Length: 238
Image (cartoon, rainbow, N blue to C red; front, side):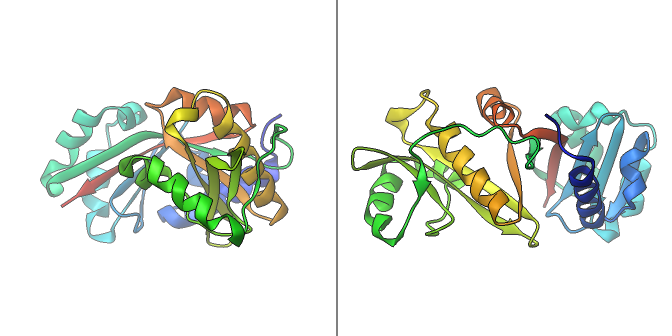
């Protein structure tokens, strides 16, 4: 199953607005640059289309840098650094990144014992938090939000958790972490599935974002029916 036409239309409108371009930009071949505040130079590639959102002072300069640019540049970090260094020091390049979405038609749930956590699970959650390296938690750790965060237990030990934050009353941005001693067993897929189900029931569109350098994470999303909407790269300037 694939995302519905209605879902795709809503995504196009949402991201076109955030990136400062018109909806038709997603149908145009080549590069469109808009004014946006995305924390840097945000590039969305979809097929032969490349949309770039950048702060207003840099719009004209960025347009000049993309006049002869193949949209595949979003996957080439060194090329991006060379292209944008004259605008300011490039401090970081994040990407290429998978932005995937699932709706009622595309979602493929899996059965498991994963459930919504309650206030009574706070202690188990804190114990779980201490087992996950800080860097991993910063990249994917969900906040403890009873009724919105999902957990999977092995006896009384929490071994996987997934939750989401709400973007603009539209997207449910999913985060997931699995206990280091319990990986490779499908637990991440189980909690993401249950979190996706909850997001859909709340009237939100689930979003799964992960690095393309982690194919296992992309595969997890795609196995649940998350469809790649764009491949994105964010360039941060000093």
